[in-house]
Length: 552
Image (cartoon, rainbow, N blue to C red; front, side, top):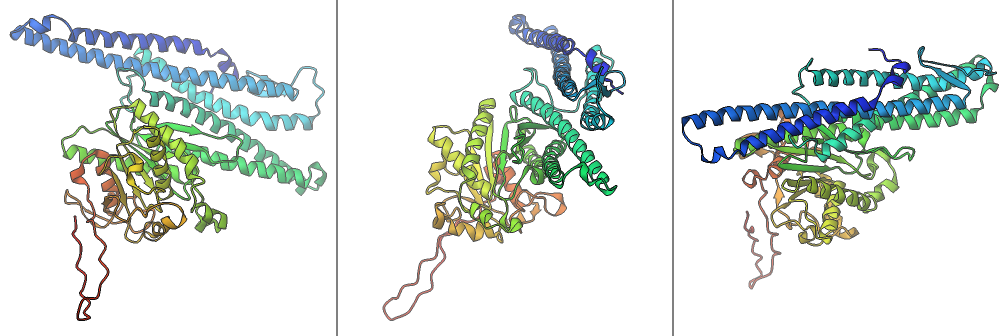
């Protein structure tokens, strides 16, 4: 449906707020009635066939009430989101009108166009420049308003019973929206608003640059200087880069059926990459929750969509293992791109980037953000089993986060796996504050970071080599898992979370799921080897061959 400026002017978010409060009250009343039926004194003393029949009937009524309450909450959520979006659009429209006024223009709400203000003496060139700036922003805003209008119609139709409550999408429980759902709704609204704004800026600057280039080609070099063109071109390039980050977050949210934008920091105007975290499944209600921290070279634009796909695959394997064990199938997996890992020096060929990978300058602030995030997850879901996965430089960031929490007497994490790790900056696993047997390492046989760089950890202040036997080591090798499935091994530093042959997780991914599920018997542990003793000279000058140490 086409939406005009006049339509937006007539919108009233207060009407939607009334729908929200009314449906929320109805949901609360349904929940109260359902709970009240369960507490009826008669059910404690009444017996016989009639009582059983009555209980069955009451049980059905309770289920109907619960379903009605959940439907009412779904309507409330749709109305609440539409109200927020309406307020945002009306605010941005007011800002656009103010900008038009500054340029000597005014907005015609019926033609959806900008015209010179009454009494204006603007020449055609000034009018064209003003239109080039204003009209793309209005076009983008009207497109967004049309989408909101569709959502608004859907909310109203659900509220009046014209359309059924959708069964797909993020579920709403009887207690209402969880903290993650509230945060995600706000973050997603902000993301889409920012995408729309930046797309308008990109379109406007591109048109301006194209027009300047056309003028120069037509023999009008005095229209604009080379410096002005270079400045606008640089701004356009920066905005396109920023838009690419925003688009990647949007893309990542579509990589699984139920996703939540738990972190969104656009860092507008800083030139720094967007920070974001996406959960697959609701971490507030899941019994098993994981957070994956990426390593060197990872960015929101290049990494987040694939990380969410990997999180989705990890969750599916976790649910499979829980199902086979007859345990509640409940898990949420989080792709956390909430810090700035160093760039990959192999790609940038930068000595400074190579040095950055060998110090903790970017791991320390990342660890502080991560520790706060982990503690918030625990507060939202205190009974959940929380697992932390750190890959490559992300393992250092994860280790420092756990050490920071441990120093404060906080222990939100139950299990941790460091894989492809170059070092953890600790001298003893106890510094993590994780119980014995719940902190693991994992490395691929041909992974140069875990196999070579980790050996150098003590030389540059990163403590012990993580693979010296201080931690139990999960297998990342090709082999058969405890369920009889043949799984690929890790061949490269990036393979650990990736699918192998047959579109199934490698042994590394299987083990991550086993730890996340909290099923120790499913974990494939590498034998613990004892270093061979050095040969020594015995009487007679013979050198006995060393014997292998015990295995586990």
